[in-house]
Length: 586
Image (cartoon, rainbow, N blue to C red):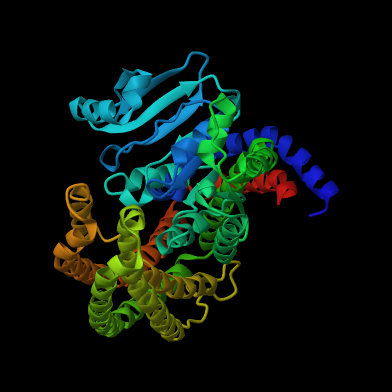
């Protein structure tokens, strides 16, 4: 976009607040109309209320910058370096990881926020590993997050959310997801010591990319561990290349969080390799970009999201109103004919879906068997690699990297099976969707009325294809297999007492068996979800249309149908006016 166009857009978004307020109030007015809500139906009206609550939350909550990354990537150190002071707790053990919400407060303080809403004051000393472990066990309810307030200047602009290590997520997975969904921007922390593993790439593709953030920062931390400039460049190029394949809008920087933190608070900065100026320059580049792309544009980013939500709410409501109004324009005989034809086609759809289930179930069973055979071969090769690692790696490297290497290799193999078969299932489901769509090719039963019921049925056909495609891409866990993770934790617990390779070999059978068990469960979940998704085509999409037809019949019979039409026309005018108000932003 040319610079003058960007400037115009910025001014336009900056002045959008009055329009947003006007449009949201218009939509609230519709929701406050009891007759209109009755006409639209309680379920749809509640859907609109959820939209309104989400929009209000987006407008009123602080701008949220969420920091993500695998365990031990230095997320908290990076946050402290950005803020120029020690705020976010560091060195938190995997058993005690917490979500830390860091926002502005004139007087610095920290509170533990429990799930029951209770707040418990914490001292700075309480945030270190040992104290936090004991405190969380003594709390009257489970910990929701730690609310940290500080007077750092940057926090006047944004709230920073420090999240647990993603590779160690169990019960906190949904909680982190909630923060991620409500984030305005994201910083993802990788490590130069373990650059962009398969699991990290998968997380970006499966959890970050679908949320369509306008900007994403990927910081490759710990570049101070590299010995040469060439090594640094190789790592950065590798991460950049892999990022571009997943998130083309990502900004990649190689940084040393610990060096920058020490620089900002005036501590000694060892410079054995002579790269101190380079570390400082790279972190400065990142901060300048963060300020330019996020901080200075935070209001624009927020406004874009709110405008998009309002626009979708308007389109959703307008489609519902137009469908009801057009059906009311028909006489009772025409509605009865359409209803009878529709019920026949519903039966056709239901039978067609049932006929496809055995084929899907058989195909997934065959995929599972193939995956199990492949995994047996993988684990046989993995045992050889474990045994050979003593001859190919130094004791220091084994101590530092062996555990992460083992977790990544097994996780990569697990996800590779699912990914390959998901693509195969996508192809199968796509074919089934096309076959179902052809079977349901219906002609319009609405004659010459203003509303073409054929359009509604055609939309249903499209939904058939879309829904069965969703069945292929969901229903199986892409997170690290939970049963297998418990076997790995046995290794981690004994790491300091026993040689880690010996421990891995002792737990080898458990890891293999747990992985195969988790894999079987994943394919079973895939099967159950596919079948459930197929059923939902009938249970939801068809049910919505049946409800609308029934509603229209009642309105045609109702002596107050003129009043109903009046409410619909007035609502349509409000939506048309609101859409016109927002049109300049799209």
